[in-house]
Length: 446
Image (cartoon, rainbow, N blue to C red; front, top):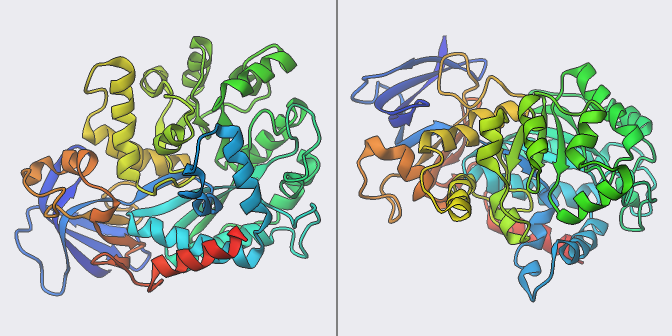
């Protein structure tokens, strides 16, 4: 029997906007029934005014990078100079400070309509590289932070073993490394999924995992049918170094060692050859685009349209959290493509919302999320259609309004598993998210 009914003034059902929908949530936190043509709220129903869409999936996050916002905008530089600031913050993380920071960051995500985050997690050990008493203390802190912020997490525990094509980790990186892929696999095998959390795997990059150990990580994920993510061809310097070391592109190297496939997602996929695109598409390897980070770091515009046409499903992430706004990520993917091609209309608003919802959740191992339909997880978010940004268009254009006009500030409600996490723009579990961010960021900036 349903335990709660929500009345959706307008809802996006994947291909169109439907007015007047009654959504019933069962005791299992899933959608029990969806009824259209309900012109008025049923007795006792919670009323969500605006446009309700499935919960947004942030498929690529480094939670501690949130502490770099604005700090790295002083002066100029490159990805590599930005990385030095990142190392400084990473050195100040402990299980306690990381929990506090991640809890605040995940609460910010909930306020932005995000119901599931893929946390690409590589800060595993204490400064100097010694394991904590619980070797997974940092990962457990992230899992608990997501629980307290009220969102789901796929912890993509990351193998990071080298500073570059066989070189030993530098002093900043030793706390990232387990030494070998076998040791990484032993540690991560002790992490267990729970109601709000899945455990996946990640290869930081081809420069950070020696070629001979890539298959170990891929095999671990394959045995558990777990998602596997990898930073791929984000930088031209990485491509050049890979060619020098192995005589092939990073994509070709991953293919050689069995990393590509439908449960694998390449993050960024920016600087690819025609052959790379064919390999990724032909193996149905996914692509996670992170446009706000890619432009913030001056990385370049990846061939998202060509990748999708080749067969690579698209998802979206906020990565370094220059902003946390999945609507902006969706909009930016289309607008970047327009700048690159000088033509308009590469994706419909429906297609962009699909990348931010169903396809993003699938990339994180949740094929039963990202849709408003019976049996799916009852995770959804409501976007205002009457703010200064969204007022004016007809409600039937709600998808276009959400993608091309709305921002995270227009999110009014976020529901996860049928539970109201954000109500009328306020977080129900973290009462003052801005203060939580300020305090936790100050603690790790040193």
